[in-house]
Length: 294
Image (cartoon, rainbow, N blue to C red; front, side, top):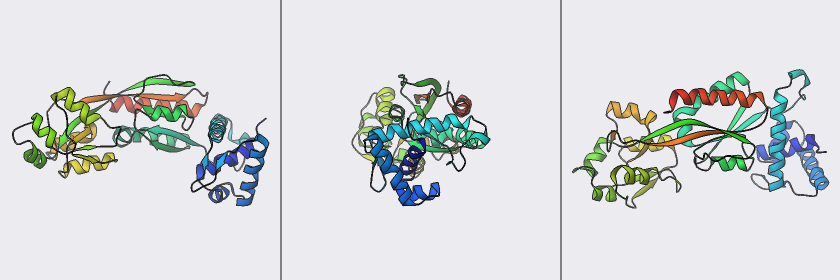
């Protein structure tokens, strides 16, 4: 039988990052936190936390933290008068890509938090890799472009996030004076979010049939990606619902009009019979139905 009280202390250390901050959150002393973690590790015969700045869970520690978080989610469905007194607020961990957070997901998160009273922790990762966060037990739900099933989870198609190739008018005049030629694309600087971002290369090959050069600016921020394009740094693929108003105002122009590419997004959520996960799923699907292409 697991010692859930001690396991909650382990989860608090992992969540807060240090024994001291966990002690403050739990309203106990750091020595009490250290003792409870040590006793549980001795009882289980395994190290659960790698001490450091911040503290990190071991593999078994991560699995046990995911288990206690799932238990706490199920406890939310209980009436308040039978929930443990002094318990830490329940926080749902959700993995999402930066473009979704910036372009459409925020209203769903706000709606869920306001109606449920729960907290959220957003883990930002590439949409092709967020499902791995679910497989590891780090999160309970994810926005992903991976349609493959995840054990113990349910996957639902949300819709398509469309992207358009944009740059400032001055950039287009400077780098594409004769139009969007192969030579111009090879020499023009462009932006990538990170090493896993292939949207620019994909658009160039699918829509123009041309490769790109090696003049790359690495910009790991959706808002900076948009702002720097408007300022003339380089061209890049922008979420169409973010870029649309700036294209309409003339601050941005499409390199090749009416040639968007899309990324199909899915909602994958743990199969826990917790009402809060149903509420979260409903909020995400409702906003996705309004904001994403079907």
